[in-house]
Length: 149
Ligand code: HEC
Image (tube, rainbow, N blue to C red):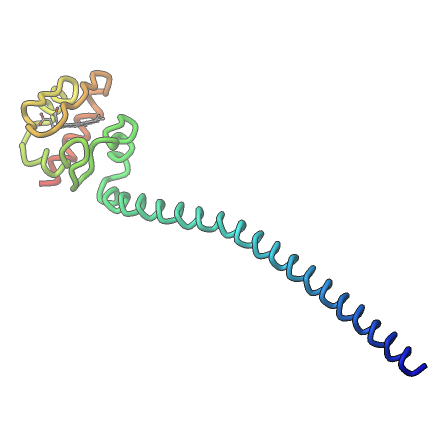
């Protein structure tokens, strides 16, 4: 009788251990799933981080823009100049600081934007003619460019 009891007891504890394991395994699976979910979730913050660093790059660029008066900055972006020109660095086109060194009059710059002379800038791709940019916009831009010397 005692032996039988012990056997039952053993069985019970065996089942208990089995159940424990089962619970344990389930909890491992659950936490694994949570981990995967957490990792999946952390993908988004990574993208956010890279978006933030992109923003940083943008804000580094806009550090240049800080020296640009708001009105001029608006004219430059409205007329797409910003795509190819920066204040101090060469992009597709020369830096405005370099353009300033050419000592153009505002009228000359109007001409050059409406009808570029690529021969003035060897080593650069020719600037696309922008005949639709309003003369008064270019005059304002030109006067500002000439303050950069
Ligand atoms: C698609 C690119 C691009 C855009 C947009 C662009 N530029 Fe240029 N720009 C250039 C390049 C390249 C040069 C140098 C080669 C040339 O003059 O053709 C240049 C040269 C210039 C020069 C010097 C011209 C000379 O002959 O010395 C001025 C001034 C200038 N750009 C002003 C502007 C202004 C203002 C705008 C916006 C209304 C503008 N650019 C838009 C690419 C561009």
